[in-house]
Image (cartoon, rainbow, N blue to C red; front, side, top):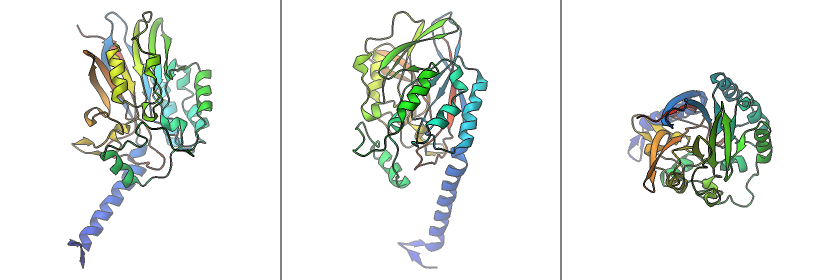
Length: 313
């Protein structure tokens, strides 16, 4: 069999077959293999009872994703103390009713949320190979810039109204207090840094003095936001956006984070230092993907049940 560019056609065909099989696996199986991650964070003041917080992120709902909807509804069986939604709920302008339905059982619990760029604007068709190459080159999609003129407007207002009606706190460049079993939690959030909607100056100054414990919430873990929260004295920051790298190399890890965070902290619990202080950072790998790049490899979709525990002595 003839070779092209020095590569036997049988080898080329084999590589193509392996690539096709990998793509089929990442789209048809792994992207629908939902997992629950459990993490303990020793961050509460001494003597406070542990709190169980369920973090959901990057749902990227497309109308008709029934398995994802069933899985999200089932998470209510965990009976968390409260829920944090770190954004990018949508990947389809028609997806709002299905997001609200899927999260309905969870909205019976106290909760709070921030939005991500995909809540505000719908995605456009992309070449998956080009998408990954841009991320490897450090080109983070919108990369901190507002969307171009003509971007699809998602009905985020309806999503906001549904969350607000359920009593979830909107943390869009603001603060709030969440009462859980007699404990007051102070929450500070900023809008999505990925599209320059973050306004940390509006919430700067550190945690409120009244609550028993305070933490920060942001969709995309850009370093400017992490630095600001940490330097201001927040002991914990919750974020999403990265999809855990979305396509990972077994025994190596993620190639990209889709922001300026390093790949070593693309998902899970880590720490962040700024201004002489240290915060815990938890980045959710999320449970979805952009509708035009609907694959995940060595990085299954997930939600996280975090147990906030008293600090170790």
